[in-house]
Image 1 (tube, rainbow, N blue to C red):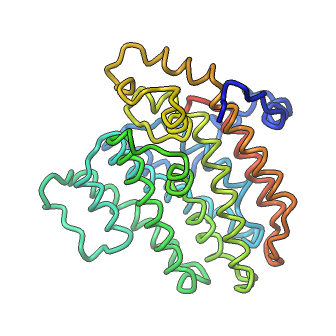
Image 2 (cartoon, rainbow, N blue to C red):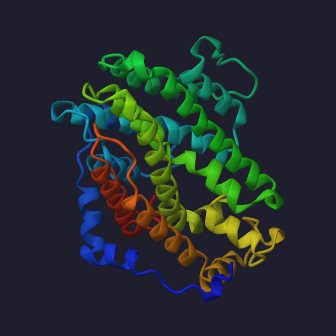
Length: 334
């Protein structure tokens, strides 16, 4: 792609023009988290402290926008709470493997959700304190999920989708450690699952008594498309921070590497010229290319009939528009 020839996208500018970014940030920072999330966030800060509480407020606020319409109004607050706890769980694992490069604790933390009977805090290299925190968070999630009317029906699907999130995290670590591996197709295919939109949707379906199983194929098709859009929003607003942290898996950085805008040997947290590297990526229009891709994907999903009747797909799509709006407003803050 000739990124330096890409014209600025208009749809993203329209999203930002609708409301002032400062107003959106105020909305987020004034979100009152459920008491259980406050407790878990406090424990996260004690054992990890890699993220600001802003992230939990950000996602908790946005669940109002993209929770499936099939979740009854009476259950929506409860479902938001579960999904925010799940976000803390999945983010902790992401921090372990990407920021801390603690693969030993990461592996055990993955087993907490998928094979709890095999978890061993005494394995070499495992941070027992972090693992205990992860187990506590997951137990809070699981006890709430087991109360869902369709838990048994969607449990195996949730388990599968969670594993795809783990795989995405391992892939991003692999790319960061092997920069010559970076390619756009891999980033879009594997990296998209880091958004865990499928898992969020599975949780919604557990609490959706009127959802028709015959709609599942079409809904997952739509979820796949929307997850790619969510990933672009995350990439274009977090890649600069990740660049300084030694995480080179963001699509913006990957594309810059693949197109020769940046050389692999320039990507090193110790490089004193990383600001210049970032500026070069901006000047060559890599971000704008991804924003244009988001626009194209948005147009495609908006004009496609997914054949789903028991979920309001247009509302789901509009939810992703809101997510993008808040991504753009909170650039560099999560």
